[in-house]
Amino acid sequence: MNAIEFRNITKEFPGIRANEDISFTVKKGSIHALIGENGAGKSTLMSILFGLYEPTAGEILINENKVFFKGPNDANALGIGMVHQHFKLVDVYSNLDNIILGAEWTKKGYIIDRNIAIKKIKALQEIYDLHFDLNQKSGQATVAVQQKVEIMKMLYRDNDILIFDEPTAVLTEEEIQGLLKSFKIFKASGKTIVFISHKLKEIEQVADYATILRKGKVAGNFEMKNSKMEQIIEAMVGSKVEVIQNDGKKYSDDIIFELEGISTKKEYKNLHDLSLKIHSGEIFAIAGVEGNGQNELEKVCSGMIKPSAGKISMKIANASGEGKSLVDITNVNVYKRSKSKMAYVPADRHHHGLILDYSIHENAIIRRLWDPQFQKMGFLKKSAIRKYVDQIIKEYDVRGSHNGYGFARSMSGGNQQKFIVGREFTSEHDFIIIVQPTRGLDIGAINNIHNRILAEKAAGKAILLISYELDEVIALADTIAVINEGHLMLTKPARELTRAEIGKYMISSAKNKGGVNAK
Image (tube, rainbow, N blue to C red; front, top):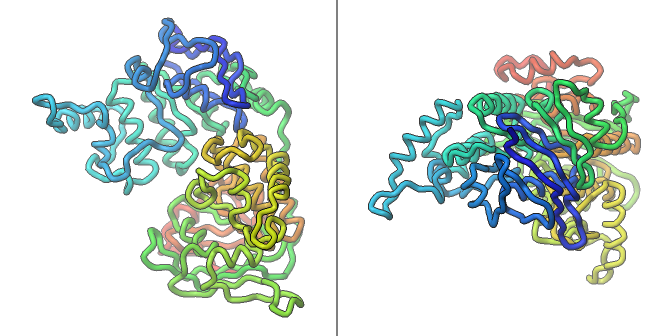
């Protein structure tokens, strides 16, 4: 029996056809992956299924009955729930109150009876192995706990069709495995799971079926046990994908960026006496389990926070205009570092990479308003800005921007990421901080960005790469340092390290530190 059937679904927005004549089925009690390039229409289709959008044409059947949703409440009433890529929680509410919001048990018609809800939720936590503190404020919870709260919202409402939009994009490897284990438990209990993902290893691990969307259309349907990943990749991107690898060519001895004895206080995970040097033409990669000081290192290097001890230096042009030298920038702010030819792709694209309610044109120059390329005597050069944005859109395949006039908020997460990467890579810089550059991207976009990172190396740029994707670190790095509990446990040339050795230092205690900080 089919839990879901899409029949000729088309969805149009002004100037964009997000979905075109989409038809496929999802079997009841199965795990069905929805795969495709960024901007292929996956989130739009799931938003239609959840009642957030009405289709322009076509129809949906749930349990072989035609349905029409006026909103998410209609979808919920038919047992459909959704965990969005960006969670829909009220930060100041407890986890409990976020779960029951809109579905509260009451006594005397108006008094909320939390005890009944707590009893039901605790029973569900035992059944589905989803344990977390109900009294904790959601805004203070980790991303993994926030996701569990979102999942519990669906289970609490007795949803049988569970939709997940990029559920593993912000999780650690351990948390990912926990979520995939939950998928199997949901399936065993008879629930139907539809999840959007770009991570082919996860799809191979848990999916029964997969549907590929490309440019808003169905490009293929696969039963996973009878399919090869090569077939799926080719259907997704329209061609075979090349393997990207650093060629290992020696970088310069010219130091562009240096940390000496950097420590922090009062941060979530303080840094402890970190030292490193990054040279012209070197990709210096930080590996480690998320939450071990990467966020603090990113903020210290970019200028968002000041270290409590230590020195930060960067090679910049001398005031005389003749030559460059290493200069202490420890107390220099983000804006001045940008003017000194530092580029920055942040981990948090919504808070540090974009102003969501500004247009793409405005976001393109927000860090470069001083640049004579874009302004003269305080007046913006609009034609130059349009030309620059058109270049980014074309070279980085940014979709959904309405030719740069649309708001950043209107683009998918993957296209927002491609735009930020394009903006920073095309800026004038000698040193670039790149954090999680391919989070939420499809395999074609990942390869494009990896190629461009290697092109940065070839052009002599100094690159600090912070990534939780170990495959990405190994493929791109000249030098790898492992961060653990705010310490650099190990710093070695990438060619001298094995995956097993990196993994050992990622999970060992910082008290048993076996490496050195600086090269």
